[in-house]
Image 1 (cartoon, rainbow, N blue to C red):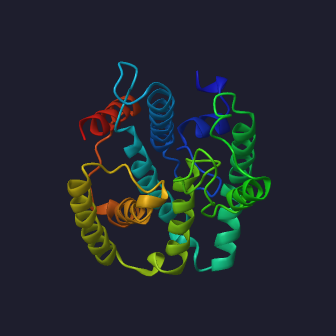
Image 2 (tube, rainbow, N blue to C red):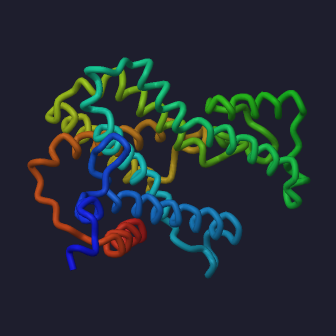
Length: 263
């Protein structure tokens, strides 16, 4: 039987899945990223389309998947780049991240503009002067807070609402390159703990963690980012000291769904 397969085929079959840099590829994280994205899509489609108190309003707390994304980003960024700083400059890091992330920012801003202009259900409220709409589009292309436009006065990313979280991802990457990558695990743990306590206090006072996407509570965005992103960095730094049970994607996705639903 062994003669049927070439040695190279046997080696490839037993070799762990690797990334382009030769590191182990955590397929379960890709799966969880997809599960979280589906939860957020369901949250937006059903709750914003049918209202928040109808039988069709599903997964009221699925917005917490954004915090999961922040934590996942912290872990993945540390995993991908912590050991590369001996031969990589800060500018090179920023260039790599821009090439990886910004093309979809441009696509999202353009689709958002087209959706705003062609929305058949928003003609009455989507009234904005051409110069102001152009300014909103330019700021969306640059992933900067946009000026208010008709029908979306409170959103920090008026033409592409979900982009507020990607703007926070950029801030997390900047903080990692300039400061966080230099900090040891205990310091990251302290930052995570203190910011987490502040976030718990805010959630208790507000009654929800759904904030940061609009101007009235824009201050919540960097707080949510700090807690989850720093937690991800810290988990990567201490992972060798943690026993990790092997749990399948379906079970983890179900747990992710339940944690958000039970909040």
